Image 1 (cartoon, rainbow over the protein chains, first blue to last red):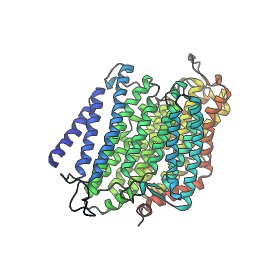
Image 2: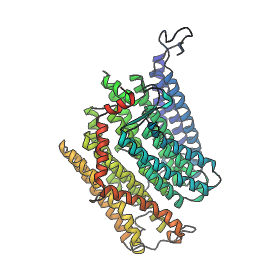
Image 3: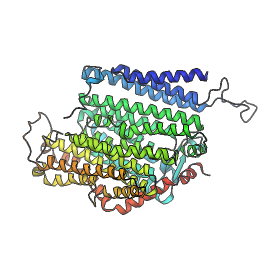
Image 4: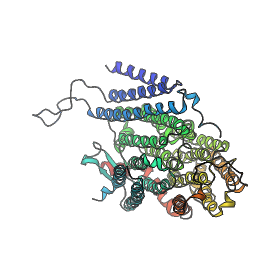
Length: 117
Length: 502
């Protein structure tokens, strides 16, 4: 499981970076989304995966009897997902707006702010 | 409960932003709330500063969960200073916004978003939890995205695409770094992390994590190879927005760098060398960029990069006096850079252009205003006794102590180019005879404005000019503050003790 996840995270980061390096705005956003998902899974993986052991203390005892799944990474991922959801929806509106205003989705054409003026 | 004051700067800005949202329909009420609220938050920040100065580091645990399990808010001298600076430039920007931003922009929620930005800044300075820092960073960037795009001009949208991409990318790297850090230590509390990282055996992985943090924060702070988004985007929004961005946003990155590298990843010669090299290149690259530009807002953008180098240099030298120098530089820089972008806004109002080639003749027309605008420009160079001189003095002395003449050369080169650029701005914009520029239709030139509008534009510039004069002439007090911050940062046991209560 860990091994598969590690490979998946590597693939997500690699494909995210590859997409970011393309010239199209849409691919840029897709790249950012893939990278964000990779980071979320990385938190999940590095928080150590424990199967089928929810962090709940049984009714008759006062502390945990054996190893349990760490709930913190899941809370972190939840927060990160919500944040990236907001940012991504902003990004999609922004590229739509950029396409309308600049009339291209080629990043190489969007260089008027870098030009000497 | 005296430690509750730690949360007040955050709560005041949050309440302000919410109040502003509720008065969405009336721009006039929004203006009064924003101005009044900024004054209140300045008073709160002064109160926090005084309390921290007298009582030492204050901490509060959210929800009463003991550190390291809950989220901690910490106000040490560094955080309190940054909150105070945010409030000072916040008050100036709030008034300047009211004077310069078009009504159409104000109608679509400019002021609430501005206060959400200040909320994020205060939160980032006061938090003691690394994941919480990430959340505050996101609040800052999403508010800044709205501010940079609001208005939707072509150049704004183009600048926003670059600004947006690099900032999100930086956030993802920051998140990756947090993931690795959590995997290594199982903790998120910065004080607890400091102890656990110091005890780790696997130094290689610690260094990798540190480099991830350096890249993530480095993009936000615009250090040497990672700064290209800044000059491409900072000149595109209205000057009031550029003023906040130039004054405060890059400094949050610097704050995070200084915090992380003085608290968590300490005593690593390899990292310090990397930071020193980056600082040297940042100073030279920023200075060269500023030299080549013609648009004054772009010149100031490159000068931001150049001067970020000085702060990073103080961090890289890693002695008490050098860090104090960096802190002094941050104090000086936030005030001056905010003011410079407001000055560029005033110049634009007077002439209707940012191009140095077309500008000119401002001194002949407005001699007193020109003298006012020279104050931030001279402070920027640091002609003694103006404010930029003192921190450079301690940075150069500390560089001499480690016999690194390349760094001194880079620092002096950066300063010299800044002087040259300022002289050029003075000659081209103020001194030389003005050309006839074709008048822009429907543009509200400065001389056409009503007197109260003029005061709203000039007032904040005067306010910040007085503060930077104070930083220059009252350097002893500021140096005392900077020394105390430097001492606290170098001895991180105090911070850890205050948070964990051991």
